[in-house]
Image (cartoon, rainbow, N blue to C red; front, side, top):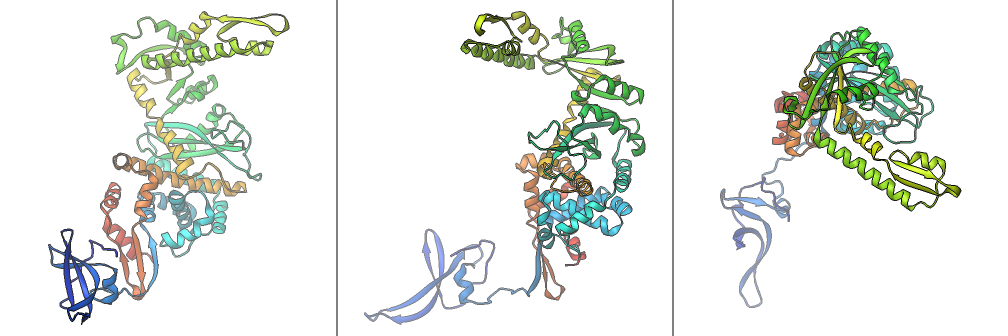
Length: 534
C-alpha cells in the first residue's frame, strides 16, 4: 500500500486502532467486531496508513481512500486538457526576449511568424522530425492553431530568401557587434534528389551521402549565431569564404575582426581580407613553406622565460610577407604538445617498420607509399631492403609543438591566442545544431522546404545557444544537459478544467533556478498559462 509523506489527513475520530511496529505506529480501521470460538472479543481490521507523530495526523495509504470515500479530498471538476507548458514557455520566452518574435512578425506577418516560432520551439525541444509535431502541439503548446507536418512543410516552403535576409539584417543590427566574429562551415546530408546544392563533397559526419554546406557567423560577446548562408556540397570550404563575406555590407557588419581556423588560410582569402579592409585572426598550417621559415628564425631559445606568455606556452611575433600580404605571424610553442606529437610520430614509424619487416615482397607503388621515413631498396622479384631515414624523421619532428596565428591586427601574442581559443563557441554551436536540434539530415524533399526548415532550425539554434550562455555553469554544476533542462521544464503542467478554471503545479527548486537565469519566475509562467487560450 503506497504512502505519500506529502499527504496528511485528520485521524478518524472513531472506529480505528493503532499498533506499533519498527518504531512506528500504524493505523487500522475496524471493519467488524465479534467474539471468536472461545468467546473472546476480536475484530477484523484493515490498514489505512501510519500515524505522523509530529502532527498527530494520518499519512493515508490506498485503503484509506476506498474506505473513507471523499474524506478530506477535493474532487477536481472534469478537465479539458493537461499540457506540459514549461519548456515551451522557456524557449518562447528566450526568443521573445532576444527580439526574434518581433523581427519575425515584421518580416513574415503575425500568422506565419507565430507558426515559425512554434516550429522553432518544437525543434529546440524535440528535434528535426516533423511527423510528430501535431501531437507535441496538442500536449505542449497554448496556441490556438496547431501545426502538423503538412502545414510545417507549407510554412517552410513559403519563407523566401528576401524574407530571410530581412530577418538577418534586423538580427545583426540588434545582436551584431564591432568586436569579434567566428566564421566556420558545417554540412547536412540528405537522401532527397530534389534539393539544389546537395552534392558529393567532404562529409564531416562520415556519411556516404550528398550534402549541402552552411557557412555561419557567431558573435563572441553574445555567443549567438548571427547569419548563415548555404552553398553546394561539392564546393571546397576555403574557396567560399569570400562569397560569404560579400554579404557583410548588406548585413551592416563593419569593423568586426574575423576569427577563422586554419582550413581557410589561403593566399586568395588573405588577399581578399586585406583588400576589403577586414581585420582577421587566422589559424595557419605549420607545413606551409613561409611558416616553417618564420619558425626556424625564432626556434633557438624559444622556450625562454622572456617568451613565456602563460603556463606552458611560449610565443614570438614576426612581421613579414605571408600569403601574399604583409601581416603579423604569432608563433607559439607548447612543449607538452611537442612531446605528444613526437610520440605519435615515433609510434607511426615503429608501426610502419613492423609492417615492412613482415612483408616478403614489395612493389614500386608500395615502396613509394612507405618511404616517408625509410630508405627502401628494391631488388629482383620484389625483394627489398629498408632502414630508417633519421634525417626525414627528424625533419618531420622538427616543428612538433608549434602552432601559428596570422593577423592584420596589432594584438599581442597572448591577446591573439586568447581570442582565437574562444572560437570554439562556433564549434559548440554546430554541435548543438547537429545533435540537439538533430539536423544531421535535412529530412526534406525540395529546395524551398529545405531552405525554410534550415531557417527555423537557425531560430532553434539561437535558443539552444542562449541556454548555453545563461545556464552553462549551472548545467555543469547540476550535471545537466540541454535535453535534461527541457525534460525538467516539461514537468510544469497546466490543467484546463471546466468552468474556465486553470490549475498549475508549483515549480521546483531546479525549475526556479532555470527560470531565474533568464530573468523569469513562477509568476511569469502563471501569467502565460492564464493569458493563453486552451
